[in-house]
Image (cartoon, rainbow, N blue to C red; front, side, top):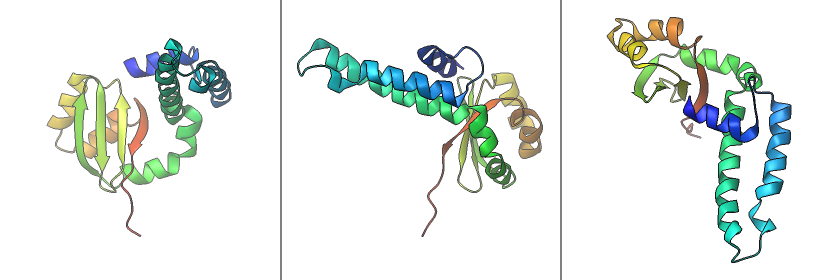
Length: 148
């Protein structure tokens, strides 16, 4: 949740993430903090490199949790969660679930009591389908490469 709020603050997003306004804010921030804008040896050049990396990472993160992105990938998400859970881990309100097809999703804001209920459930996938998937902000974090 902290990561979401920090990135929203960086891009000036108040509530709902809209890709069009996010893209505009991204372009403006990149113009302002692009490292090539500063001379070599300038004290601001190092800061600009750090800020530009932060801006790029934040943009990609917010795009991945935007409602438009989630809606566009809904079919793929449904197929993935129906494959079953291979592994999961919880760290500081982020639940990371790896599915049987090799795809990993992060769910933000999952509290420790909810995680404990999940691991104590006799049917983990069923619990997740009812209590985790529809109720928490998520994004695909990794996809296993398919063999050619």
